[in-house]
Length: 203
Length: 375
Image (cartoon, rainbow over all chains, first blue to last red; front, side, top):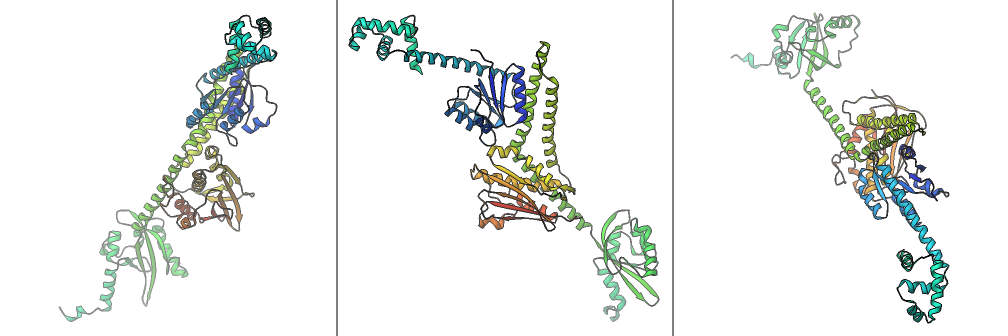
């Protein structure tokens, strides 16, 4: 499912909001703009964004504070902070808190678009990854508990006989479970199954 | 030597007085002819008594008095109305060689049978005036220095204020280039809008510079009619960044009626900048995140009262008496002249600057300015 990327801009300076919006529009990227962190939080119907451009200094709830709030809600998109000259230490804290990147005003030619595109790509690939994991999880859930046991031991590298001994069932039963597992997990080979389990365990 | 010369006869006493006097003494008759010219007058005007006696007094006066003196005398003799007799006045004198100088002249009348003379006693004001002028210049330099110091402290804010429109301009310009590309590819985009916005933002940056140049300007006091609300608004614009940075609330309650005051705009702004900066510093030093500064303008009787109130820690009672002293400061980097300069400026405008602690705590400085025209 490919949608148009959507960027979110949060900045209290009208000229900066508008100029960034126009610049991204000229690059074929659409934006939603907010003049404050509070205005953003108050909007309950925020669409899914691919990237957020966030001013680090704003009156009221500032950029870092909003970022912390979004982190607590496990926001699924990268945030690029907009900083002024004296804000480098703040920007560094932001990166440590998990921000994708930061830009210092005034922006170098092409810098903004470059970083936004990088953020969008990052977002898309991590979204893709999330979707894949979700798919894997639902496949695992569709296996019975016994099938899950077999799957776990298979991934550990035990032969059928060893699995049968470990679980106290016959090798024949193990084979049946194994077939079901491979089918439900849509794994074409044992190594593929092992990769799937490894991916799930890495999260 | 005979005994007579030891006695102080009336004639001797008079001569002795004339010669001993520190001030210049000139005696003229009713036609303005100089009859006597003492030592001090000789030194002051650079003429010898024998050279000026017999000439008209007007030769010691620059224009317009030079031409008008005869008329003054005539009018007095006819009408008995004098504008200088019995009082004193500051006028200019004319030395030999053509230099004029400030002097204080008092004139008395000598009416005797057969004789109607006038005696002028002259005090040279040259040195006094020169010193006063020096002091005035030094004061102006001091006020100017204070403004530069404040400007230095506001640098981060100033850089930010100019950087914002520059950032927008750069982004608009980049957008413009892209749009032109798109237009040649047949896609949309409004170049006119981009150009308009760039113009607007350029003017926005220019305004910031303009405001600062006014503050930095040195020069003599220049009073004019101003709207106090506007002066304060201009001042508050300088603090947008500081206020944002420290998350302080800065509230302005302007005067509801339109009142012009006759002041030097830069000086009043200087007071406001000092007071607001002090409040911001106090709040920031106390590490407060709920700082609040209120500026109220009210009219009371024939005075305008501008108060700057903050909810900071306030000034401890033990230090309140010393607040307006020169070089008194509690700031590690402070010079301690700000408040004393502000008080001086207020006084020069016929007003005052005072401190009070509000009931709810914090600080409140009140600047009072008379509404009557001065000068």
